[in-house]
Length: 288
Length: 288
Image 1: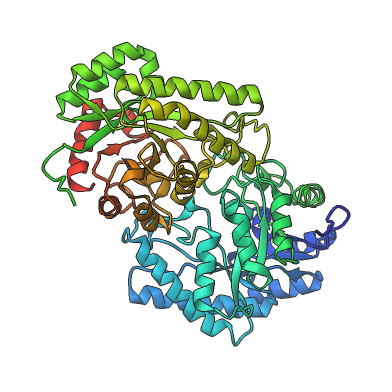
Image 2 (image 1 turned 45 degrees about the vertical axis):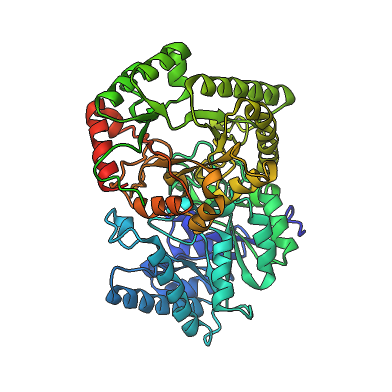
């Protein structure tokens, strides 16, 4: 297992971690200043400053990407909505290519309208079918552009409104169905927050293997958790056995970054960006 | 599939649904007054009025039980804690026998101390082992007393603090390990709130079959869900395909009650008990 205790070589910062504090260029500068070599930008944060500005800032700071967040949200209430979602995913692939990302992370979506509290229907099976169809179509677009797609299973508490792929096993079943050869065009993003509880986690990481393990997102599960979305904890502040799971990832062949992704409305998002980055570095070395 | 549209024969009220409003005797009276034939008492509500008072009130009202909530909480930080938890579970079996319950529902517990925000350790694998050992020991006590044990998988968002059994598949694996013959001494409680998201739900209900399906708890998943514990919705107000899942239960041989269990700090717990029961009846007939 790689030794993280004395360096940042495999540390990446998901830009959501600094969302309310800094713009994309400020995040790139901040990471460079702290000796952090990689980031994973969110699409809306890139859009705010513009793709070209973001791309130049990231390259000027000497950073690489560990992923691009995010494509997905495939289900819709009608054919026009499905087509629009797919078209938007094509643009996400284009942006990921422009930014030089190693993969496009997919948060696949769930019941259309549920995120706004007005689900168009209750048929999660239909949404799951639309997700598989959407990934299949996106794969046809992404494969010739050499942009791997990383399905991110989300915690089951998001099954209604954000993602109806909720276990690593389910994500890998989709990978095996759409990309049976497993050449690297389709894989998974393993996020500790979403998957730590799963009694089959170790076995499914092993099943995935190096060709399917495209990203590893770290944070912690707090007790109590006070908000379903915005209470992701800093590594070491919760109950996830982070290093144990990283060991499973590495045993399965994963050798990429550990990407810190923290949504924390009442804690880290309130603190100065430099303090957040310094804490990420310290916890990366001691806990991850 | 049984027709619920014109009667209450298979309606049961979990007493948590009326928790802040009524005492156990008041709940029993209320159910009788509304023509509801069954309840599932919580242990702490029984303890408040005393076991004998509760038992007499339930019998006087002519009610049967659909379950008794709850045993479990097996994991502990040390041997003394494990022994104390097991001893308490023996008392829960005794009470379930006294009340004439068809089963004792088990919420198995998770990381000791996590519910108080002070987890004694992070090793969920250890807790899972302690849960299996605890159920095995409790089964030795419950079987000669003819009290079936129903393992209730809880939603993965409770994996840290309430139950480290989080899927129906995991619960059934435990059943098969401890009770391979499947004579009815050990089974599962399928609660829609905890299991609706699971892509393997239909297959695992089918696997369980009539001998393992000991209880069926109904409510709904609201979008948005504003609290991790106290925002369970009334059937029909959320996104769960309740009737579809009941169909899966019946196809697998389940012919028991549909037990309404709603924790709702800001809605149903604020309303008059008679209004809650009338709504449960109406939704049982139209949605369940």
